[in-house]
Figure 1 (cartoon, rainbow, N blue to C red):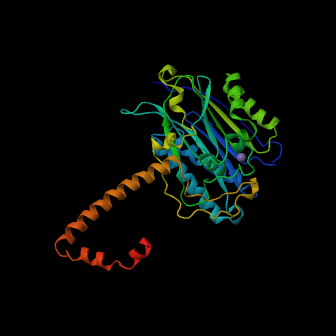
Figure 2: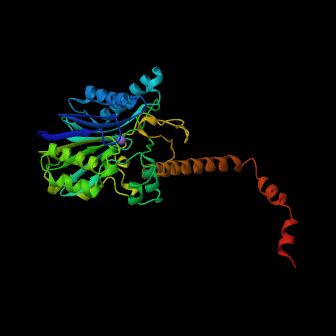
Figure 3: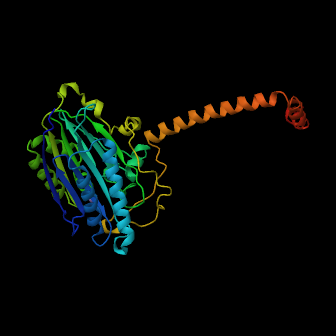
Length: 359
Ligand code: MN
């Protein structure tokens, strides 16, 4: 199977910010949107570094989703190390979302891999319906997941720009990534939150459907964000899949990865999350990334579908271990200690019982 893509990309600083700290990469086999944060143009440095590392590692595609994740982890380390060496760049970071072609091998058919860290998104438009293929790592997403706010409230939440994961902030990073089939006619939309803040999913869908040419679609989406306020830098890449599986064989609903049901999160099906878990996230009130008005808060204990599944497995394993230990203890205590039963029963203070029974 050939892998033929067509794409367009656009970016704009918006109406408020002086600089554009977003960076993007649109290349044959790899597409990246990175949204930098940090004062004194450090955000630009961070997002550009992420793009550079991913360009270097993935221009011929990703041999596997694991390689894609490894490249993102490498970008994280590069940004973190640079920030540590340069006081002006301390605390710089960037979100990232990546769509890469996995060309396939003797044993695997060509497909796509998607990854994200932070709140830059990848959407999929298939058969006229728009779905989020990534789940934001953000404060409002946590509030959504736990049912504290609605989707409408999330859009207008005063703290909607707080991300809970980003590249460059800590020595290691957790990356969400998963494979997707190549389906003819699919259109992917990668974007920074500057689009999401100003254009809701309904309008994104309408604009994406209304402009068949991917460059025009990208231009129109960016223009809509700027027209609606342009409070943040905005970047959009539109990628069309020109060949691949027959769309009839792929039900859009089965790829609704960003469903509000946490258990439907794709990483539960394909956990290539890696890079280690940050030992001690940032204190909630540590100011970070003041340059873009963003702040990072550490939330290590997100009760997402993945976390729940993990805890369930841990609980089952612990139950088995405890049962085995209990059996072992019971057996070993059988012969030497027949006296324990009388001891414990006789040690119960007899005087407490009568007082509660009363007259
Ligand atoms: Mn942004």
